[in-house]
Length: 563
Image 1: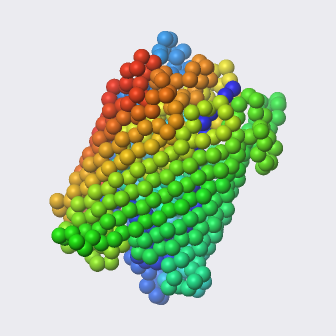
Image 2: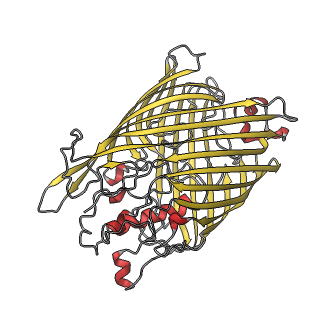
Image 3: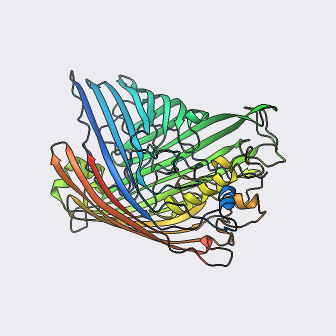
């Protein structure tokens, strides 16, 4: 057996970006269009208030097929098959999200959130069960029975700081490592997000008027890109963070130590053991916004950055020469070292033009929400791993809710890794009952991994209620693009379509769409829109003959209600 690539996105650092100031932007630094969300009313002294907000979103998607690995089960059913598709071209999905909030004066809040989500009708994917949301017959097909509890926590603003206890979201900076799955993106949709069972305390040690915040937290991960508590993953984290934040200006650092275990059994008649991950994460993030007074109309320059590294060890992925080490034990030559890093930075400009969309305070803190024209360029880098057989893990993956385009990362590379991981665990393989260690952690779930990219985007608002948007993704891998599954049964050092892994060009993606928000009452908004993306594949997606796949594309019809 050979080691599969472990994609680490440790997302438990849960520093509350809006905990200690009403005007803190939270996710400033990327283009975020106005969604029609009804904001929570500010708390008032002596007033007990229950508010219930949320949304119902429906999506129709058409996806053009592209080649994927053939699982052993599929090969038995179709002898001679050399490639396979996702099996899903047309489908309708939805999510209904409800967020009740109870305010008890100005000091106490109780916040809950839950989703009812999944597919409603259409084609099903197959051989994708390793993905966290595989869109197949076994996971979330019935969109009216797949209930996902998200948040239920108590928040107390005390004289010395803020205390938050319960099941709560996790978000930091641009959302590369910690992303709560509740921040709208320009293209694509947020999914489940990072959720933790947590006790968190944040305070201003230099006084209430100070912009300096220190936060300390301990948690058990309920769900993120690496662990799901209900699947038997037990990931405990300790967090220490400090940041400066005044309006749109923010600079901060947080550190996370994670200890994750999952009980395994080699065979019923043999012995039980524990797979473990021990890792530390260091993440630095910042953002800014400045007016451009020389411009002919109100204009702002804004930007942000985030950079992170993960250092540690694991025996959850290993080769035949690496026996499981003692649970919780130190790293040895039997353990795989974790050495990954990644980051992103963005710079944008806003030309404000709609008086109804830029009240003074909001224009100062979130000019990207209220501009008539918003343009931005984002660049990103995630380290890659060209050798699935060595004892050092180098590949970094962004959180899937940090969206970069529609097609390349969220469809093509997502399903390539999901199919490879699912095929590696196929029961018709000789080792199917005991798959390659780490195979279950191969899927990217739609996150950017092992790639560097340039992502220019723009929004034009001819009316305050209408967004016209466009974008492009130019990307290449940061290491050879190797399919670990093909390396196991075939011994072939090739990419996910059997081609040359040393070709790094992933291609050019073009995206476009529109979004309209129509008020139906004081607290109800109708959203109508469409998005589409097309990928012109590069050599990294070519097959053994050097031919690139047929041009993948996706079209999405969008309808929603915000209340």
